[in-house]
Length: 276
Image (cartoon, rainbow, N blue to C red; front, side):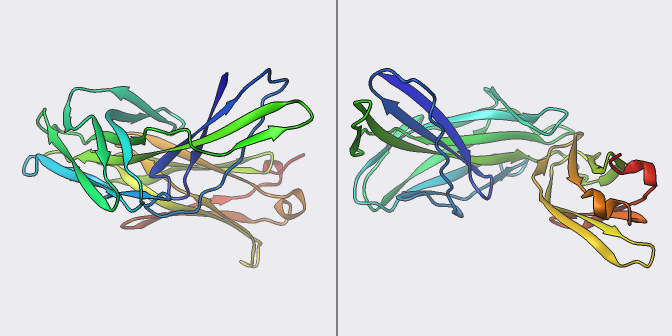
């Protein structure tokens, strides 16, 4: 029996869903399953609240609640990872002993809830520390089997949800400073870099890229979904302008819409910046 693991990022990007697909027999090719979940803070039968947790020198513990809205009990395994990002903004998770949590394995009965208790083991420092709590459903193989009559392959589908919630440990003196580090354009592709020079995370909601002609008329626009930018790091956002529009541009404006503020950048467009 073979096991294929697919990961789907949810719309709000606070949760990761793992889908385990089991097929018997010989697989001639890998079948890619694309499943889109449009959700807020819930799966089909359970939810986790709150979606984030802030700890500090004054608040050293907290609680997440796992709520089972279904008619069957659900088993979970729980873990906490330190959360960092690479130079491209990709999330990196590593094991940590700086956060205490309980329980590590739990069962939530139908129409009830259980608490996951979180505690800070190390004191806050001059920079914010970031972690993520993972609450992963332990799957039960109970989905109906499908039969491929041509290849005589039976496939059972098991879906397991894994929620991921940020834990932020605030520094002693929080400072939020974020700037547009640079805006450049090459071969018709605009690249804007947002730099977080503060000591706490920022959350970019959207990056709007606008192109204007010489008469200030907006002839191009694109919005790019944002994400967290952890302290001291940068994140880049790209937008490709169609060749027929690029030649008419006089300038590019970028508007990074943060949770608390907006920051802007401007680039005067030269003809050699467009695709040749």
